[in-house]
Every structure is written in C-alpha cells, then in structure tokens.
Image 1 (tube, helix red, strand yellow):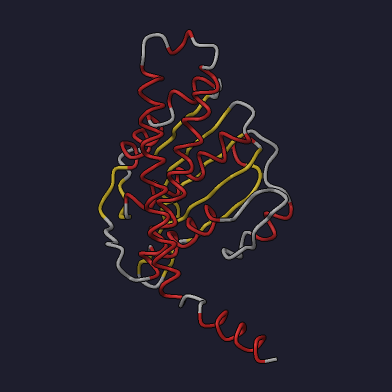
Image 2: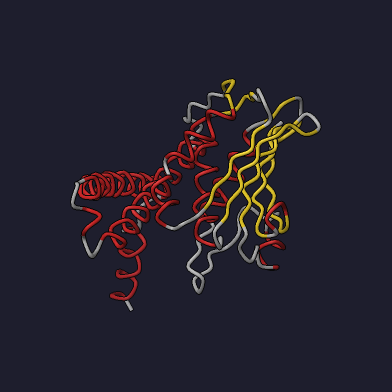
Length: 241
C-alpha cells in the first residue's frame, strides 16, 4: 500500500502546470512552423526551376506545396489564437480597398487554380473600402478559399458588397454544398473534433473568433454557412459591421 501511494504522489507531482504546458505547446508550434516554412521554401525553389514542369512528379510537388502552406497557415492561426487569448495580439483595423485586397489574396493561389482547372471570379462593389484587420481577415478568406478549392467542381466566386451598413464577403463554389450536420452546427464555433472526418474545426473556430473581434456601435461581425448562392453550392459568408 505504501508503494502504491508513493507512485500516485509522484505521478501527480510530475504533471506540469497548465501554464507550463501552454508555453511548451506554443514553443512546439513555433518550431513546427519554422520547419514547415523551410519545406515550403525548398518546394517553391524546385517548382520554380525551368525543368519542374517536365518532372513526372510535378503534380505531386504542386499538391505537396499547397498542403505545406495550408499546414503553415494552421500553425499561424494557432499562434494567433494564443495571442488573442493572452490579449497580446496587436489588433489593427485599417481602411482597406476590397478590390486590391481580394486580388492580392487570389494571386497567391493562381498557380494552383490553373493547375486544378478552377475558374475563380472576383466581384467587388466599385470603390468599396472597409475597416478591418488585414492580417486576420486574410486568414479567414484563406480558410474559405482552401475549402472551396477542395470541394468545388470547377468554379468559385468571391463577392464583396455593402449591404445594410455591413461589409458582406461571400466565397461560393459549385460543389455539393455543406452537409446538414455542418449547417446545424455552424452557430457553435466551439465544435468538437471529428476524428472520422479528420476535422479539428480549427479554421471555423478561428474565423468565427476573428469575425466577432470586429465590432462597431454594439454590432458584432458574424460568420454564416449556407447553401445556394450564385453557383448553387456552398456559401461561406463573412459579415463585418
């Protein structure tokens, strides 16, 4: 009995505090992000070579580069959520030209869109400017674009317009749309992990948090998922006051 008691005491005593565990996880995420960034650099150097398109593995390299960038973005989102939780994120809304902002975003995916034969169209109200944190909203739009490219048949629309005093950003595709389960759970940003489907819900949670950080005169930003739209598929809708 004495031996068992000692083992239990030592076991409990060896459990790190929540603070120490958080610091450990953040440090690990930083380390992983640095490694993934090096991997991306190597892949892009290989793809930029004149002989890259002649390689039998060119398609695989393109996909690997995209997935590496997606992982890197996820790690950045984890670090951003940590900073938001610690209230140390430098939230900085600025007046942003939507036409320029969205075309810069799309340019980052141009090669992959061409490789997958996906037609992407950007529609923006003329002269539309809005106040938001450019880095945070870039992460939200990036999440939506990655999902749209994964599930679309061959078309994506990005639409930015002002409606009833709010900026409405829509990312629509012509895939099969969201499942009824996802639509039912879309009001809960803290959804559980789907081990069978391989979804952690990180992208949705991050996007919902970012939306709610943007507020004006008591009105909060919001995130909506729906089916239909101009392409009769999935519609990711971000509304900012």
